[in-house]
Length: 213
Image (tube, rainbow, N blue to C red; front, side, top):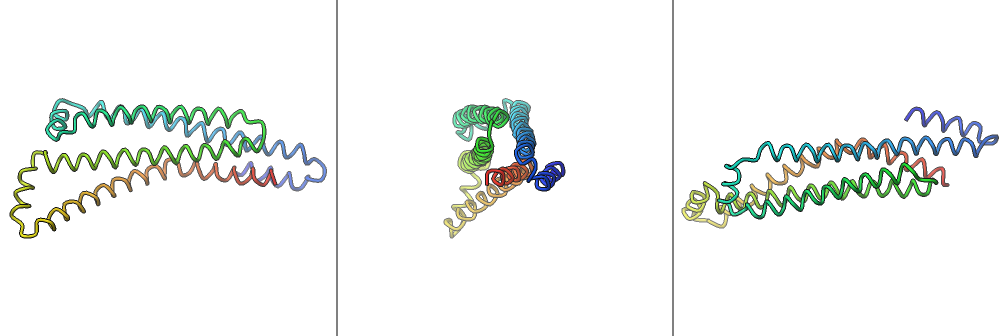
């Protein structure tokens, strides 16, 4: 942001002589920086989609399918995967659309609206991915406990306990804690991945508001 800060100082110093020229130059620089940030968000979303798709294919085998069928999750996971891919492709389209909108704005007001739209899209994208992971893990733990290879042993242990309710409560809390940890890790990953870019975009947004004032 050093280039932007220098231009701002120069603009303020010469504000009385060339206000229009310097204001336009400052807007052009903010536009360029914002466009670059949104472009990177678009590229990252594509890279993430390709990475997780590749991981899905590389880790997929007949044993996994057999285990999913045993846990009564095969059809559910297939439907969830289709929904996931469709929505992710839609988000990639939104990132591209936002990039085009930000890159070809004609005024500070339009750029402000574009930046707010980008931040909203990123937020929705992150929450969707967290939701998909949460639903997948909930279904996985349910299938594993009720129909997995160790399901019979788990139910036998529960029947042997004097306080079976406490036993199931412990199992439930343990699963929820593990899900919470997984969601926390993913949230931290997104915070790191998108946080830096969004903070820069937020700084640009503040500068635009000053220009509009």
